[in-house]
Amino acid sequence: MSNTRWTTRDLPRMDGRTVVVTGANSGLGLVTSRELAQVGARVVLAVRDTERGAATAREIGGATEVRKLDLADLGSIRAFAEQWSEPIDVLINNAGIMMVPEGRTADGFERQFGTNHLGHFALTNLLLPHLTDRVVTVSSQAHRRGRIDLADLNWKTRPYSPSGAYGQSKLANLLFTLELQRRLTAVGAPLRAVAAHPGWAATNLQGHTQNPIAHLAMSVGNKLIAQDATAGALPTLFAATQDLPPAAYIGPDGFYEYRGYPKPVGRSDDASNSELAQELWSASEKLTGVTFPITAE
Image (tube, helix red, strand yellow):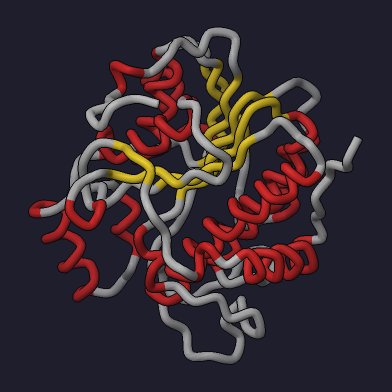
């Protein structure tokens, strides 16, 4: 593992390795894809808008490829997974939406939980037979404000809260990583499940709240507190390339993990709750119809 001032200059060569990055058209996903392509990885940009994806691929250069993926549609996720017959070294579950108004995915899930967690849950399990190294899932410090309501994961009975739904989805990302690693270890699979968070990174993620007060607060924070997308992508790049313990969580080393260089960081008590992780996994299987595909040898 590297020292506390790890940057993109410390990335190892990735020649001959295939990396799938969700949400690669902009923000952290674009930077992550660009940096991995620059060190020789074959990067597959998994995006909703393939025209924008093609423009991004041209901007990034290197060995890039664009494939259509809408994480808010289980049909699209299954179609994406069915394209694969070759090995994938690293899957980076980066895509996400943040504090958006109430809405539903194509399958009727609350949009943030459905996209940020259930979409990546289904994608990961469908791709697991092809994975050779690790799964990196991008969470957030907002997981500390999240609460998993197993009786109402999709906000059908409780009053909708954009920030509460986002926090729940980011807590779900960490619980997913915890339970995925437990299952991989139990069957003797050589894969690792790890997570990362970018701190406060100034990207377009914060621009869809449709709440003037929240938008103003985020705009001020982006100017006074946030780091840029290149710095925000460092924890993800570190998690994707460094020798880390199973279920590691990487974030910035600065105040409240808002900014800084990547390092292993802590998580909330709820995010460390293995029983809750197993319960969420079972609920996610029922909602998506997707199950863990690997059995013990």
